[in-house]
Image (cartoon, rainbow, N blue to C red; front, side, top):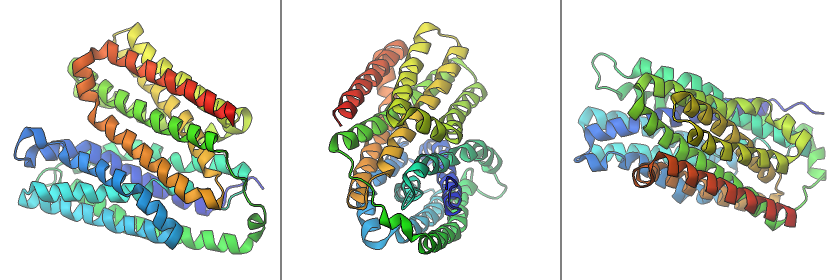
Length: 386
């Protein structure tokens, strides 16, 4: 049987909601922070606290999932998303910066739980279905890439409300819609397991430590390179092109990040996980080389698309490896992996501006090229030792 269980598609929708919230957060956090912060230097603190929440709680949530089950932790995440919207609304109504900080910290708690959706999709699945399930859930980003910018434009200003207030209300609405979706996922998942107990009779093999380390390092650093280069490219585009041009370029990049999810599982089955990750890092290196070869906007657009596809291959490959962990390894290793990704994402959010200022655009690309090549070699060495 090579058809995905229906409950996986509930997680696809849940992941789309997660990424809609994340993209909306990127859109408004700095602007609202600048509006409410006592000084301009504190404007990005709310967004930074969002990543700090993810960094501090990812491993804790993974531990709680092992003790209480994924569903309870996912529903707690929905509560955090709901209050993120309420606190953001109150922050703008009352013009209180501390409430905005609490809002984004609460949003970070939600995202921390939601980052486990792709692993939940592969729980108790046959090994040949794991790549397809993981990629299917990640593909929820396509929906977010299309819908989130439209929501941001449509709800930026509403009569009678301070600017961007309605966007925070969307967070709460997403939470109210997401909670029953997760309930239905859990119900369908349990029914499926009751009907198909045979999968429990075939325990998954224990993955070698070297292979786990290779997957964690490749997935986390692919995320770091993608985040740094995306933000630096955005800054570079906004300096030399219109805001509209820059926005379209970033939207193309986000689509390139997630559209490959519809076919990457077939590549994993044909090439194998390692070769898929190899291809991802080759594309990441190429994305850093293209802007060095040409300075025009078209070069940056192509580089951003290649960057997105490269990230997807490396990230999906690493996620597929870790989704195949057995019950003894699963929660601890996945928690460590998500914590490592959160750390790299945090660094990727804070470092682009200093790197671009200190090194310049060309040298920043060279640095990303060297880093991608280094991780590529490390992955080859670790995976072959396994």
